[in-house]
Image 1 (cartoon, one colour):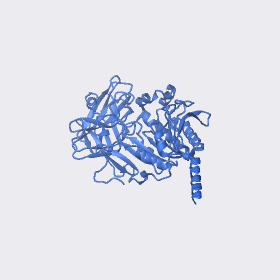
Image 2 (cartoon, helix red, strand yellow):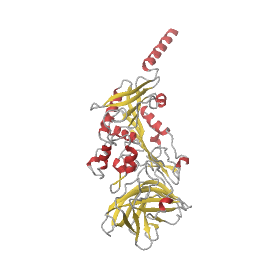
Image 3 (tube, one colour):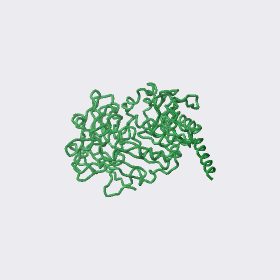
Image 4 (tube, one colour):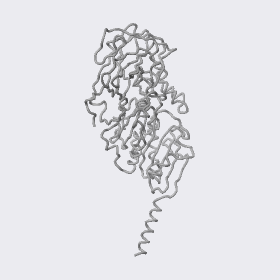
Length: 509
């Protein structure tokens, strides 16, 4: 009996030895072939004591993912028992070819990459992906490819519609994005090409904004976005297209989950505002292991951080079913009134000088995003500041803030910059959301500009005041209008539309 036991034990040990590889392996700067003959560069790490076939944890990035002396996420590889792979986008770092932002070939590259992984002798055919900003968009390309190897992805601070971050309403260029992202990535010619296509309906954007295959994708998605991230303008429209089993979190961040640019209102010190990687790790690892994610057990389809109240809340639909839309009218004496205009209908004028534009201060921007004191901005003579009386109760605004501005201008083409502001009891004004719309005007004829300002979830607390700034520019975030102008806002006919949430109505759960 003892001999039989020893024999059986030896067989099990031998089988385990054959099924596992004891030492870790790191393959630097591998060539991964694409269908057109171009080779992408990849760094592959295979962990210690791995099974014969393992899943793969991947990032696909234009930001020098390969070529270093250290592998991508080795700790995660060892803990999970999976391979990790970092791949450079076409035309970036060590990869061949030319980089073209959001170009349709990215989907083919993603598909070829997933097929290559699934065909490797170490692979069990399951892939999960991670990354923020453009490495988040490469994950969308993986989803759009429909490749079954992708079982889950975790994109963060991404855009589903590049046109929405390159252009504001009326075709206003957002030069800050071009300047922040251009260096070291794309050729000047490619950016000039993007700049030539300002109209949202331009066929040029069809393949770059094509999300038709997302809902049918097999992989589930954990999507994280920020209220002050420049790329997050279309967050909820995009999430609606995600495959079943996906989950969304929107926090008080700028361009990066847990990224706070140390604005004047700093949510990094608020309990719960910062998140850990625990949810992301569990979401991806459970997919590799064939388990139901813990996010599927949460009491909502998504989670939002309600600023001002500074709490996380689960919700199930967007816009929220309990939303009450209230108009915020511009009134005589630079007043603001909810639901009905007060005082005489009239006009308030503001000037614009392209040599001295109103400066951008915070907001949904790449750098220095978030809420800052607008005191210096409002001290300018070319900024109108309309303000309510002190609030008798909390006012929650969650959803899309829209503007309906009736104006006249001395210039044929002029901009109207709108900013929703929270005025604290000490008088300090802090920005909440903003946008700019470019209009065409006939001499002394009123023109109506209806446009989306932005999305938010924000509570104006009791004792605070709501303010709206009106100006002719918000630079350098938005492109300046060419000509000087005097523009007149028509009171009584102009308003913001606020998506307010009654306190007495419970959240959807």
